[in-house]
Picture (tube, rainbow, N blue to C red):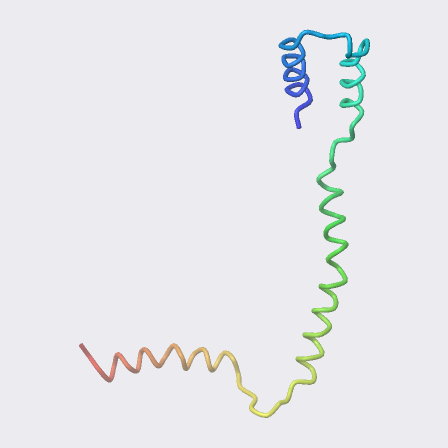
Amino acid sequence: MNLAELQKKLVAAARANPPSDRVPYAFEKRIMARLALLPCPDAWALWSRALWRAVAPCVMIALLLGLWAFFAPKGNPSDLSQDFENTLLVAVDHANNYPQ
């Protein structure tokens, strides 16, 4: 939040309403001093906190997937590159066998 714009809005709102006896002396100065003391959020700290919280679930997922890949049954070993190439070549063979 831009403090300069907030200060302008608060001053404009204060000028629109005349002070009464219920408002303590120098109330607006105390409020503005408190607003200036508020810490600005640090984006890098927020990101680092979120990433450190995500470390444990990511490590667990990586370990589970590694164990699954290591202990998976090896019944029908197939080469993914060969499967991919055969799938692509089916379209070429189909086009050669059935010309338009």
